[in-house]
Length: 244
Length: 340
Image (cartoon, rainbow over all chains, first blue to last red; front, side):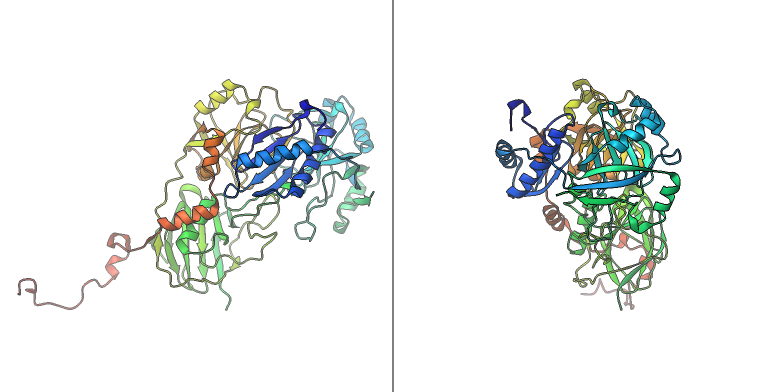
């Protein structure tokens, strides 16, 4: 820990959990601290701790109230925080994933681009140019939160929920992209479509991404996208390159 | 012959459920399992079976079932009228379903989620350590008429019939909540208004969560909607953009961006899951210490429920077909009581 003002917040999250929150807003630094702190707690093997999960800027330490209690867990967490150092967050893997941005595949591209102060063509160019990182996995199984887009992409969620989106939808809000895995409502805007499945429950490795992975999107025409979809074995035409 | 259950008719919300898949939150998979896990523990207490067995969850509507080998079973959770070949049976009690007989379970009269638990359990192949259907995660799917399910062996077939007095958890009322990491995103007057509001369980709800309707202004945070997405636990009360609360249930997302005003304690969450549309609900904050004191493991809950089970002694008014029984046999001279 470098400075006292960076001390994380410890808050209850359920009767069997403590949330360690490193920041109230998303930064690369806060994300890297959260991901590495999760690893540290897992490695520490704390008695009575049943589950350690990270999100964008926080880590939840779940415990069994019959084996330990909030006070004991909190003291252990505070000792770990005092020793915690943020590692260098170089990605281990780079994914390249085809995405279609034609009107049939991107019903809210124009609206989202306008909120970011861009034309739809500029928006697609910026998404293609960005190397995003898996900053969290969640909401639905294997679903990646990808960040960070440039500052003008800090557009809010919709005030109402979109009831349903196709799997593989590329959606955006608050400088992030998500490849949609869920059959669930969302307030994020639908700006493109991939044929990538982030979660393959029938396989021995059900989850494609690991936090920290780098991800780039490659714009393809509607015709190319149709071909990609017709080859179910290609997992959406995605490639994964091991960097280190 | 392998024991199996056949589904002849099925409402739209029938799924196989157990106590779910804990431990995958980091990969984005919520625990899932029964929307009212207490109902599965009640069935385990009645039948004397392990708590992790899989049962059939019925959301709102029931179904018609038969088995090819006699099996003990119990109906718990939502109150659903049921009969075996037309003879009514009571909920929260053990019964035997004879081979070939038709068990008919009707729509919920009170509550939302009813459970049909068969001794031996549903024996479908586990996926990631559980048999629970998780619809949003694409694990399993709703049961359909014509489906058959394998059943495990009943380890305690001669166990005496039992019944269990069950506290009403279908009437809504005051729900206890605790503060969470985002409670202070809301102004004190918004928190006060929240606890003074009487909500109505909306018709919109499922295993992911239920929406709450109310009159008046929305419950918004002080700084709008640009909160960083953060970890969720079942019971969290999430405010969507227009300030409408949803209480998240067992099959909820693991991370979300809408602010959460607090979290229903696990002991009271079955009351939310079982609140039928139109049920009134109010919320009361506990301190963290008070909330933590309510934490109880499923194993401890099962031990408590097992102690509450009573042998089922059939009283004449519980026997629907009383007149079919031969209650008096033979003849007497008529002066038996007067003779010395």
